[in-house]
Image 1 (spheres, rainbow, N blue to C red):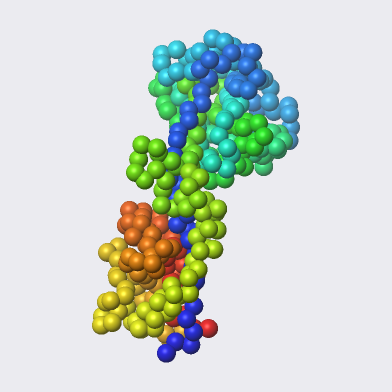
Image 2: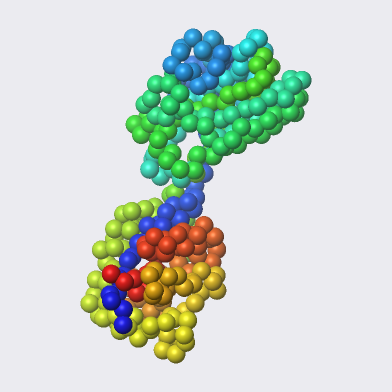
Length: 342
């Protein structure tokens, strides 16, 4: 007999995996923007160094785009914003202010795109984003997104970097403003032509009136978002009926070794992904299993197991989360750590 039976339930990993599913996409670029616009702006800068190390003198020139410049970078075409060489020892730095309309908490990912070319020499480009409500002069205020990219001479190159986590760190919740930049890091004194600048906001608004069902299964409160509000409802309802826990306990005690057949075949299933395996804590074997109670009244909050199994089968990242969760004696959606000695 086990010293104790510990059931650890954590649907957090699963809800996070759903939040990485994208709903609507919103494209923001400089189409229709003019030099008089206040919410959207683009600047070509000449810098001695970046980040600025707290020294404003490192920003030599900051020139706002003209109406013609905005037309040039609004579309991916043959018309370009041509930036002359910044001078010996200096680099190009492009500053972009953008206002987005999405709720900050609904933003799942932001893709930053810059199309450009250099003249007669290869150069390295980096994309940075400014933390909201911080001093742009300070090094710690800027965060590089992804890696640098080499742009060959006289060849238009598309550079896309994505903010995949913590988008709220960069978007002002009151105004929706976000500031990002493209730094032509090396070498110095390079002429750059800019063809297109834009960003795509991918939100986690996940309702489709033309689909069936309209709401995702994880959207328990049907507000079109899969988030901790849904988790709270799920947690509150978990084993809300004592008959559920009685049935669960009955099945739990009858199966001492899910790999050993017999009675276990009636209650446990080994998933085809093969993520179940024996681990050892002290001298006792411990297993992590997904339990499917089938249909009926006991499936009110357990019936989504089928959905979870499908998600696991299709999502290698989620499978890895489950493996790590087991190691940490935590569990993901509908997963129980079996027989952990206390």
